[in-house]
Image 1 (cartoon, rainbow, N blue to C red):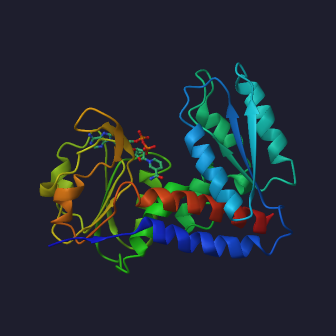
Image 2 (image 1 turned 180 degrees about the horizontal axis):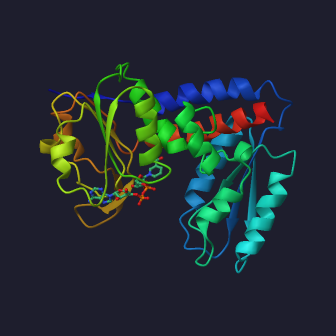
Length: 285
Ligand code: NAD
């Protein structure tokens, strides 16, 4: 069998078109997304911030980057978040990570007002998934499930396996799939025999961050495979770097029924969902 490829870029385009239409109902330049960061951290957030800014601006969303000086501690960051929380011109707030050492990321994320928490990391938004995604759902989890929905598969009664149990990816995906009446297993680093679980999966999500973790022999023939991971690996010639997921894509494509590429699968949809959450936040304020 040759798997059908799920085109994340096309799905993202569709979401962006709908977001752009919703943003156009506001006065030009009013819907605002603020990205707060602390200079001098481990780095790595600049590339994401640049692509988020480009995407926001293309949709008519103002992108306000709030750069706190190097050496800003947790108290300073919380103060900046409080100011954005109470600024009526700001509709969405995102926290650029990784933060410098000594700042508790979870505490900072929880300080963002739930109705401005467009990344969906606040416990109030995570908890709302129990009630069928009424709040702002974590972008990557929503993107992964949206990508799966694009196949038209009815999830009811199917076996879903989620590899990865993080708060913003694996756990919310598992809850959303339970809401859709799928039977869900969550696997993680301490799972004894990963393949025994994945081989049962009609739907397999993987978000471990381990290149090559999921081989073709671990996939049920015909399964939908949604690879969320983004891993940088060295090219075989030792030259540059390239991005791969957790799944051995070439071999898995011969077994799966549906598969996402990396890059070009869940990634672009995640950014589009961030914009969708921003306009949703603006509409609700
Ligand atoms: P995380 O480090 O918080 O969680 C990783 C999870 O994988 C944990 O549950 C861990 O137990 C599990 N795991 C690790 N090694 C494993 C193994 N050998 N076997 C089974 N389980 C294993 O990571 P995260 O923030 O959830 O991100 C996961 C991946 O998703 C990363 O590759 C990240 O880059 C990617 N990601 C992608 C997007 C996107 O837009 N596509 C967004 C966020 C994160």
